Image (cartoon, rainbow, N blue to C red; front, side, top):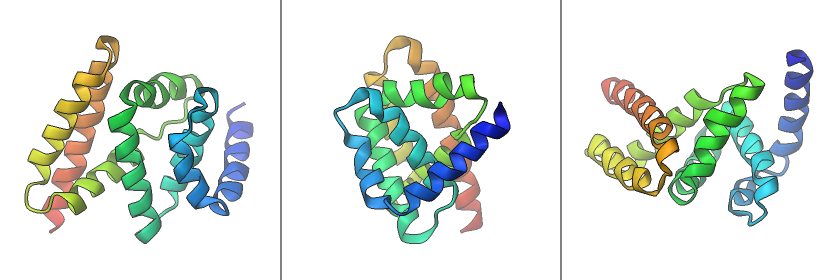
Length: 148
């Protein structure tokens, strides 16, 4: 079953690449039932992006986490656990990159303030997952800061 899933994801990636701006905007859809599809599409783009596209994805991803932290946790930790396909590390890397761009010289403090605010918006059962995500972002930040 997993190989079929990966084949379908690769086809999805090819169709998404041609529609990148629309896919990024789709995170803001009001259609809750379709959002998971768009989250998969954005995650696939993250796996294969760099430069300007990566920045656009980072901005949209950070905004999504801020506005819909519970849906984010559900997608990243609960839903993908069923498929055994994880985008956690890539999302953490992209969000860490956003803090590197937005918060030059105060990246760690900026990330802590962001996640403190997001945790308040999380339902109690999702807070531990968001804390796990935030810890991964912190690891990526430390790695990126050491390279600078």
